Image (cartoon, rainbow, N blue to C red):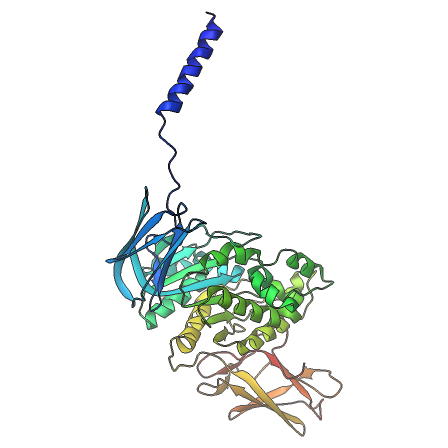
Length: 470
């Protein structure tokens, strides 16, 4: 026998030994989405749904504390169980999931309020890059606030899972988390006093089309706008990809609501944003199947969009107007940021106040507190001779100017040419006039990319920019 023949025979014997001594192939493990895990928060006062995957027909037993449910995986290997609603609780419970050959166990699970934090870079912006970051991080010790960041994922079809894990809010876990989300959650805990779960699912530089579910486009084809604008073509080539990858997997999860900071990337197509954004919100609500949960958003801050040469100046006020128009959608709320932006930086760092104002909106709109949560909102205009008399909602304690006199009001006559105007507060109204316009027909307030106007209510909340013409 040659050396090579002997070596071949040995290899054959070794392979046979492996084949006959290796264990039999095991069935697939029982699994769950990654947002079910240690330290998670489940939504209080709503039925608790837990789900996952196993072998077709496999029996799965799920225990939530002392309660237990049994189910069987369907033909697609999916299983789910429902437990009765539970009140808020700071006492942790455990979850165990037992399949045929494999089990999972999660501990330190709390019941409280779960909020999704989504949008583009101003939502993604981390605590490390905000005002007083070191001080804020050192003080971020909130054992019953839990943080989950969804890993970025673009997908052409809806996915069943996301990548990420829950962490207890602490100086170790908070630095890279969404600053707006964290400061919002912190404000809620100070006033609502229940465990808070924050799911950050955001991606910088992304338009709203990416976050809109396919079903919304199917139900309303007008959402799928077409334009000669090259930006529009690029956007609409892949709609829904971020909804598919980063929102659809969690759409079965019971939540309290959503906060949203986005709009900058839609400035080139600003005229379509009212319909698109309203359709996106309605699409989310339909996909989640939990009724009109609160959807609270941030109006984009002042910034000089001429810094992006291909983008038209004057688009930002149209987006802000579209955001204000979106308040017609039930259970929505808007935060105005004209006073806390940075015209030189599209990422203003005072995220503390953004989060606080979102918290005010949540407390009023969702939690039913009788508080002032919005600055003045234009309601109506009356033209009287050479004057325009403006009325507002959300007066709070009354109107006020931060400074010697009101700024950023313009007025126009029949020729449509706007000029700077004098504006004064008279009781609950603002009276606007200019010697250049003897018979005014329209008024605009803060209606430019970079405007930082100074009309507030006495509760310290700024008025939203507006125009009375169309």
